[in-house]
Image 1 (tube, helix red, strand yellow):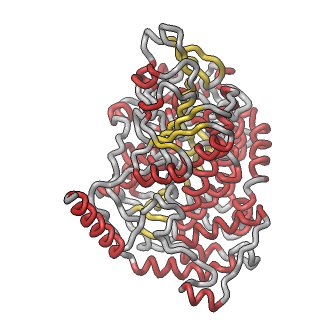
Image 2 (spheres, rainbow, N blue to C red):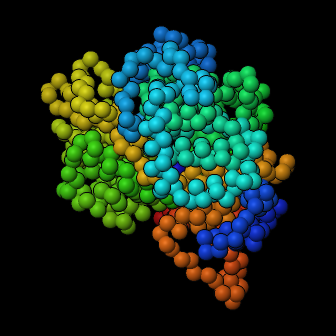
Image 3 (cartoon, helix red, strand yellow):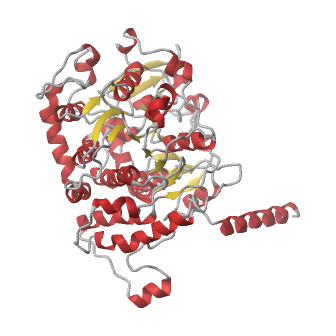
Amino acid sequence: MSEPVGEAKLEVKQASKEVKESENVAEKYSAMTVSKNSEITMGELSTVFSAVPTHKPVKKQIQFVEDKQEFSRFPTKAGRRSLSRSISQSSTDSYSSAASYTDSSDDETSPRDKTQVNSKGSSDFCVKNIKQAEFGRREIEIAEQDMSALISLRKRAQSEKPLAGAKIVGCTHITAQTAVLIETLVALGAQCRWTACNIYSTQNEVAAALSETGVAVFAWKGESEDDFWWCIDRCINTETWQPNMILDDGGDLTHWMYKKYPNVFKKIRGIVEESVTGVHRLYQLSKAGKLCVPAMNVNDSVTKQKFDNLYCCRESILDGLKRTTDVMFGGKQVVVCGYGEVGKGCCAALKALGAIVYVTEIDPICALQACMDGFRVVKLNEVIRQVDVIITCTGNKNVVTRDQLDRMKNGSIVCNMGHSNTEIDVASLRTPELTWERVRSQVDHVIWPDGKRIILLAEGRLLNLSCSTVPTFVLSITATTQALALIELYNAPEGRYKQDVYLLPKKMDEYVASLHLATFDAHLTELSDEQAKYLGLNKNGPFKPNYYRYTFTHFKILKWGNIFKLILTYCYCTRLFANT
């Protein structure tokens, strides 16, 4: 997705000590690459994996759900019985999942009204049905087979318990892949309490399997919005357990703790955030001087951006569309709104199947990339009457409006691959003159008075987690990065990280990548001493500077000299064009 461009001056922090520590990573961790099998102690991890502070560009304002809605009213018993269909910007309406043995409608009784006990006699959890634990365990075992790098990290560090004493509260998608991450954290010594970052993303049997092992899970597929906030509150608010670490996806748990439990929030040792929305929220707190704990921006790590966002979406977009609509893409006209990493993945997959792909973009750099990749860049209104499929992946709101939906042809498919459900104006379709007809799970016909109908998928929520699944291997890369970030923040000596948002050091990204190369039987070429000296590199990395993002569209970190050159170039071009 295209990133918002800050309008104010970038504030670049030069931290020579931290940069020097990051450079020393290469020497101390060269033995950890796949090509060398020597062991590493987790005690060294906090010394060498020193993250680089991010610059804090002024971001577009990300609006929270109104405090009045979230915090003034506590969830009512009456409100939890029916699924919320409200359209909000919170993550409660952002995701869903089809990957569950049991549909949420098979039992109308709310889990909050049940008393369930696992085999150990504990009732400190709230899931759909604890009896599904055996099925969930099989799901987790399947996921482990394609997450060998994370399992390898677990085995290497398990004896040293680098997370001993860590009390991690997490708010992510509760899937089989996430369960492998959670059980890895537990194996490394952490205690965990977990909830879902969205009301539809939970695999019920996986939540049951985790609860059976003793992890306090509060989540089930098909929560109401009241249930969502109740589950978050239950994870945080417990008399005998106080969290000291946060792993978040979307920022809802962080925001809830910051607003409702400020004293608990001040005692947090570190936050790890993996989503665009959550990172923007952290930057807002930091800019306002309200971020009182260090935070790690996993979303902008190379291993997240270039793998999860790109390759995951490249495969899962087709899976979601075909499972729901059985559409053939050869010759179909498709518009992809946004040509960031997600958009690039979607376009590549659709083009490979013979679709005619158009792209809409606001960023001239991304637009130029789309043109040179062979796609025609258009305004949506120019092709709205002729396209067969619209896919949004911008992270913005009202990308597809009611007026444009009115002009689409009969049988068109509309779906979203962005973080939240705000990209398609679904709220405008809930009017008396339009008829909603449920075709199958997560597939609706919206019928106009003249008989025209469009196919709306997942009510505008994220398509791949709503209607299909995502590739396990890609999630292993992200999960390994999250685990290392938690280890680093928890073990970092006092003073290394201040109350700011940090990026992962390049060497950590390289290490995560190296762990996954063995799956492909890949063999890295090693630099000779002469070559390393010629390039000015350590033979064992890092091989790229911290500002190198492996893509033409990301300029997260630049040195002051480079920024000054860009400013001069901009001023020169502005004067040049003004005089022509």
